[in-house]
Image (cartoon, rainbow, N blue to C red; front, side, top):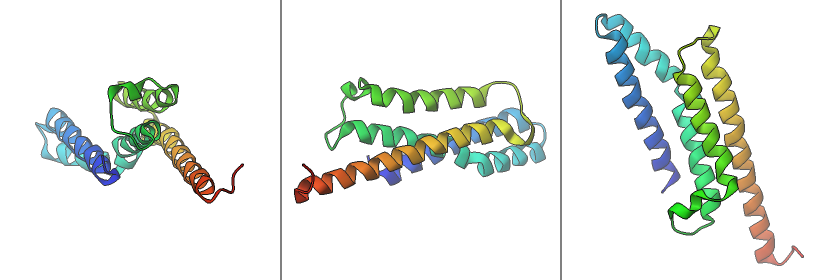
Length: 138
């Protein structure tokens, strides 16, 4: 799957879920509905968008240029990123709040560290492949 489409999928799911929350909690007051959509939109880079990036990068890493099959879920290098995404989503769905949207910020920070780490690993793999092709690595 192209990276653009993965991100679009993550954004689409976030919008769909936000609409559900807006209807659930803002059905009686249109201002509450708008507030929910705006807050979730502003905080979305700390949730579904980065989670989709982490899951997509982990999947890309274990695919290693091959086609998708369910056996790709077996390598241990896919457990941690997918587990992180599940745990972060679970934490955001818990019924407690931390001041200043702390749940979003903590989960977002952890998720962005994972995303950037996977990005760095991808750059290292590309560099190693380039060295192999050039015959510079022994």
